[in-house]
Image (cartoon, rainbow over all chains, first blue to last red):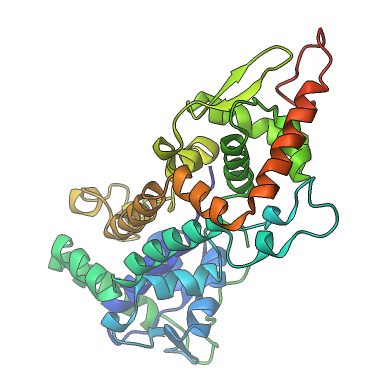
Length: 180
Length: 180
């Protein structure tokens, strides 16, 4: 069964948490893909969406890459989901209430006015879900992560990132997007 | 963009509301499809799921068809959604936290123990959505519907249903499922 929120959301949030750990080091989507052993071309499609939504900002050049564009506490899980998944409704109402064998060609106004009662319940459920996603920020996730990961691990990853970035050849334009 | 809950849910709930209006008249999925001017073969795939979940019961014979198996107030929107969509998660966690370039072959226990913090937020959001769907019953929807539809319309549809059922040829086995 296909989940509502795809693996792109999971990848996106994990990457943002790594950007949060990387402090001043800007990372390319290829760096992040190799760090997490995931597909670089897949990840390269997610970052422009996060950039468009104002969650990350890109810089060019040898030291270029992505950085968080907002403080951690100002990025909610909902913002990330919306940036990556777009305007994906919980329920796609086809308005079949407009059709009934006894209506003939024209449905009466009472049958089509207002929001369908079924759709209204689905909208409430969607709102409950979105409210919950909005209530959690990247800062909350980072705190949970920091509570689990040993300090040595964070240092180890930061060293991995710095090494990668300093190994970049000057003069060679940093590719923000991995080749697809 | 594909919605999380498909048109099958919309069709299913509308059909259950019609069964609620039909009182003692059992209806086949073909009757319900023609009443609503929707695909009979599509609808025929939904009813076995509702029957399996104990929401409708089927009877055979000339007067056979589907009836609600429970009182309206005992059928929640969540039960209908689960019956039709199955166990479809909001978020499909791929556990990419298990992977990290610095982990080598074996991720450390701290990285894999417990529920991933991202997954935990998604599970909370899913619960909020499900709680809302559970809070609305078919009785609530029927009340809203009854408040909108004029009595003459309900009578008109009930007459349509009765005519259809009495036009069935005795001896010809009633098909519960429309041919696909």
